[in-house]
Amino acid sequence: MLNQNKGENKMNKKIVTITAGLGLLISFGVTPAAYAASVSDATSKNHIVFEADESTTTPIDPTDPDNPNPPNPVDPTDPENPGTGNSGPLSIDYVSNIEFGTQTISSNTMTYYAQNENPFVQVTDNRGTGAGWTLTAKASEFKSTDGNKVLKGAELSFKNGQAKTQSANISEAPDTKDVTFNNADAQIMMNAKKDTGRGTWVDVFSGTAEKK
Image (cartoon, rainbow, N blue to C red):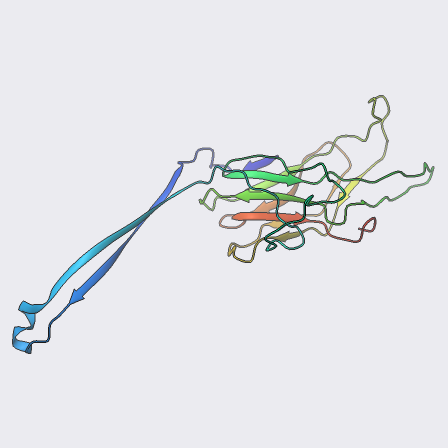
């Protein structure tokens, strides 16, 4: 779930018009006494109109956001995942599906590590307002494929996330949070305060495969 900060429910597509004046002055090689009559000036008015970007943002390389040719698939452990396809000025572009593989049943408390080396979530804020945003998530129960059995006591944790973006993005990074899902409550994964988190950001949980 991607929540826009309170008070930002409406957005004018045309964000802002910026104007600038360019002053020009020309003078001639004449005596000082004739200077006032020989000077001519003019002003060029320049403007640009910014609009919120409504297009779809494709996944970037979570290990190297500046990579002009991200790997395809971007998460080899999740090869059928092309991204969400969400469009609009504030969007969730990619969410990794976490794969734990086949494990042996045990009566003991066990910890299983993801097979994904760099699972990540990607968010793009092209609104141009600097209003900030919050990314929250909640997890459902682990159930059998037929939905009849529940894996009781299971917890799903995401730790040591890093916020990354392209080097050309001068915006300050959003905050990332360690989360453990042990109930149905929504939890904050990323939080961009006012004037932070602009552009495209990934929250990547990098590690060695099956050891995070």
